Image (tube, rainbow over all chains, first blue to last red; front, side, top):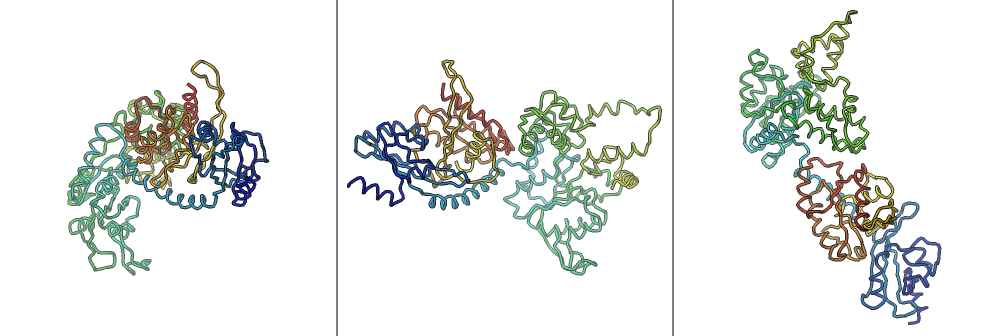
Length: 460
Length: 160
């Protein structure tokens, strides 16, 4: 077939073509060829790789095609970006012509329409698959896990695995503020996932006023009280077949302690304003940083409820008992915070490690995270330095013993006691992450005494 | 494998940009980057023009055409530290590439390092699929962590 006819057929089919020399220079091409490659053209005598860098490195195979050793070369869906950002997809193929003066022909076909269709389908499919596999990975490499490798934390992990497998109705978690009681409760839910079809429902008994706590827990019927315009399920019902996590159980008012005890014993309760008993199948995990035995002695916590809750208990170790875990955990926070702060901090400097190891950490892991998070703001190199930590926490203590060892000295000029007291109360709240029980304990006073002072200085 | 961040790594290396949105690559996109001069095995200073092929990721219904690997001098195999299956598919990919381009320099990137939560588990899994002496970089296209280092190390390895 005469070459002119072939060229007309190719142009008619919207196929760009270029005849190439033995050295793969462009000898002859149609306008479409240059148009597809966004080149001013036609540019004959130029090497084809000037317009198709994708052929760089393919010299051996092009030679083999020319000499009849290989039938052809096909590069599918080569992307070309326009200055406006749109993508053109091209199929590029090279064939032998059998003509010594122009032994190769390079063909280009615009396949953008097909590629865009495939892109749309693939985009949706991959996005879903990426998210699914990331979720699976979270199960395999769980993020909501207790951090640390020390012996005390290993024991806690073992306890969690064992407790999760036991079909018991109540678990009591004990530990100072910030030791990971909520994370532990979630881990139990995660581990017993195959036996637990329901949700994980969390409520802090200290965060909700007594008047609302009852309706939140047990729900209410329409008309049960002035603003009850519709009926509402309580959290116990929401957690049916799952777990309810009662954080700060020590703050539960005595009246509700009795109702909770009744529920634990009978597994039934009545919504406010209803006479109909509701039966649910849930597991209760309660947590506290208070000494419940002392509270029982003092009459502020029901003894029978304490024994009902204290069937299986896990004591979470304070950070100061976890040795070098302080360093591992701080480095873990650094890594997770890097993306948030757009930094590339690798780890703590050796001096910063020493400083962290010397701290008493009354706020435990929560306090450590806050310190690291604030220090990351100031971090400038690839290590978190002592200076960053000091900038993050001006009151960074050298050690707790220093405070108790050095008796307080009143300045000769005296000082305004109210201001000092107010400042101490605020600092204690900050250290305990606004947890009043934790802050009270830091100052060696009862929660009631602490609250009294907060009210006195309008700090609530 | 798809979705591990190949395009983002190349965008970070070549243009020093990062886009949070995910756009799956179809086919192949070639970009060029002139690297800082490096010393070859004979002590000669060389300027390397890297031609980087950003390839469509493999999946169960898409295998990268072998023609894409022809003539390659080096390869960076990328896994996603948040997706264990992207680690598991590395040996198969390595075998395919080495069959088509014997003698090719291969380095490994464990990307999305900024999202890594439990390093020990991931490291263990990666160690299982890599051979002794393989070079691995934990990278983050988002923060730029070790991205340039990985590409330049490959360039250095290729001229040795």
